[in-house]
Image (cartoon, rainbow, N blue to C red; front, side, top):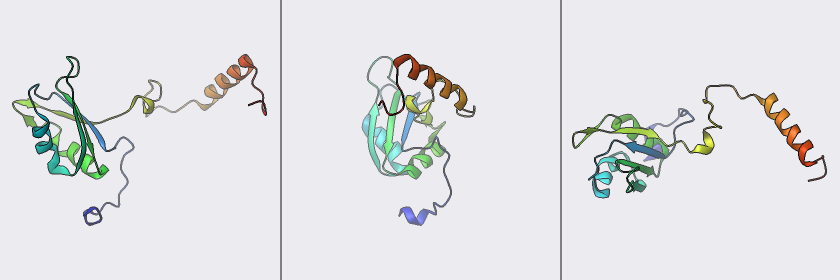
Length: 129
């Protein structure tokens, strides 16, 4: 079925199989989540927030990245029990590149200088490690 969808285009780098959903009704069940999000493809896992600071939030992991993209495209702003949900791609902290925006260029020279300082501080020389 995946080959039938015409998936020849490149996806933006933020697109992934895991999506983050917020502004959910606190009383929503996992079965209701599967009903809503399962219409866009096979789901591997749904994690609903249970603590005070995570209630109304969830992670949905799809089997296929294109199904996740389709869900984000169609469900962001969808009304669930009188609440308009927000659906985003999950961005792990390790990919956020130390607080700088992805559109900002990475200063390779500054990184090299920091690395040299650390090498001299700890006495690391080529062939030593």
